[in-house]
Image (tube, rainbow, N blue to C red; front, side, top):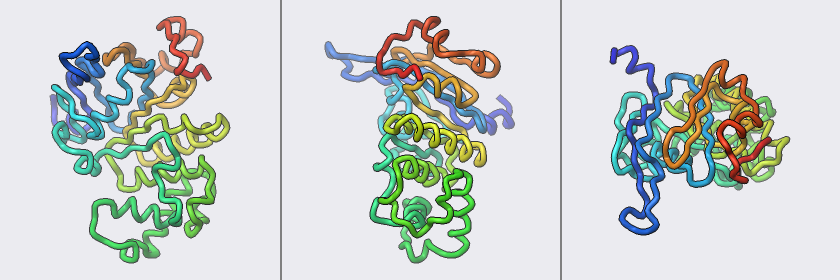
Length: 267
């Protein structure tokens, strides 16, 4: 592998294995020799039925769990044995609950400052200044929601979609190498989810982020991102991109791969 190619590959998971309840009657392989490579700016949507290994995959990357064997390399750094807080420099994550990623009683600019200063020994007074506020406005303007003009508004008055979009900006503000979207639209109504997905695409493309999005919504998986992968029993069952991905529709995907799990949304 050439040095140029090594720089291009941002996320590389090799032969990852995670077995829960090993040696018991409840033994279950959550990751079973899983491997994946994503390059700079790749946006991969991940689908699969309950228990397929989607959440385990994100936790293995973010550090929420330790894999039994295999490696997790991000931006050339071996993160396999690092805890979550030490991976935060390279890996950011947006969760499903729009209330979970923000501080309700604080303002938009204070929330963003907390994200910037995460892990640093500084107070908000040192963090907030005119230059930083200009940066906040520039980032928020990519969402198209008008939040750049509401820096001093309390987060508690924002809608669920606005809060989730803010959580997205908080995740990417420190320029991580990899962004993990953990069903980040699942708790939103369809109209709001569409707004948040549009905001996500704008923010991800603007920052050129390598992104892995887990979703139960197959239409979202088809419509967004440049790659689609399906997990089954901890293994990579499907990987499509380019014209093959753009030619997919929900019906053909269901028919081709016999997807029947009612937790996968058809639209």
